[in-house]
Amino acid sequence: KEERIVVLETENAALHLKLAEYQGLAGRSTNEILQLYAAHGQQMKLQRSSVVTQLHGAIKKRLKQDLKSLRSFALELSKDFQRQSKICLYQVLAAVQGIQLQNEAMQMFQIKAFDLEQSLQEVTERYEKEKQKRKALHNSLIELRGNIRVHCRIRPLLPFDDAAGHSVSQDRRRNFSEKAAYAADDETVLVKCSRPGHASVNKTFQFERVYSDLESQDAVFADVAPLLTSLLDGYNVCIMAYGQTGSGKTYTMLGPQLEGNLAFSVEEESELGIIPRATQEVFRLISEKAPGSYWVEVSVVEVYNNEIFDLLAKDSYGKVFGIKRDVVTTREGKSDVPLLTHE
Image (tube, rainbow, N blue to C red; front, side):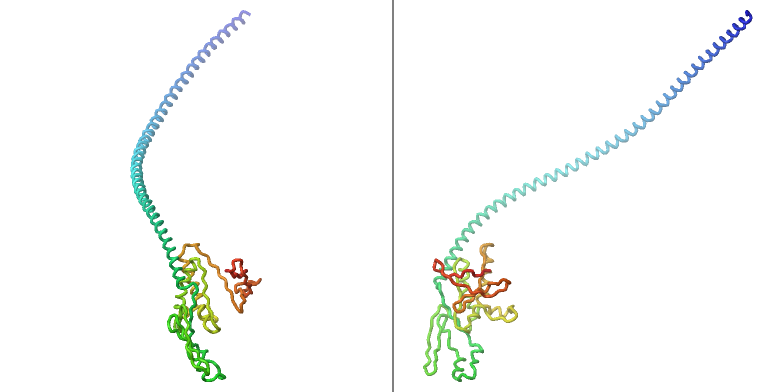
């Protein structure tokens, strides 16, 4: 047992020695590892410092470049701003000067407009006075010439006047072809009265105006045209033709009768009668007046055997045909045709 104990103690001592050896080895390994960690950390620190230094240098260089570019851009922007400011200033000054000139011109125009308005008002007042004076003088002249005037127009001999037929005696046919009325002057008509078996007698008749057989439609209308001015002045005007069949009433009032073609040639326009000429003259006078001053209404009637027919009346189909109208006497004692068609 003692030997076994000695052996065990010896083995235990050996194990303690190995343990101490291993502990020393582990301590040295730990120190080496710590040293390696320290060296690695130092190396990483140096590497990071180098990278930071390089990055800092690159950033600094880039910032310097950007700052230089920014300064250059700011300088150009400042120069451009100054240039644009000068241009805008010149434009503002020019606009201000233009506005001042326009204001001065506007003031001058306002002064001129005011003067023109006063002049226009004065001219308008004078015009109205002169128009009233003209109206009074014109219608006084018309009244002096006669409110009711009777004119006589001698119709020239026409080819059908000599077509009396073979049953009429030679003397009678010769009388047909001879003039029976002459215009002695502008107011006198000389009529040769000749009957078979009686001596010829010359009779004279006086009128306000006498037209010979050679006078034109222009001459006839020239005497009635002033009445149209009185018409637009508010006076009632009536122009009528009276005479036996074939005496020339239709020609005097309307002109030549057209067949087929309703258009007048230049030569035929000179033969237009009173009605178409008066229509043209009325509308010409209206065109010289202020717009909206007048409106025109037309009615057409036929008087035959003391009966009146409305020639503008239409039936239920829209066809124009003459309808007989009655003449009534109003309370004022005037004659009126009710239901007369106006267009």
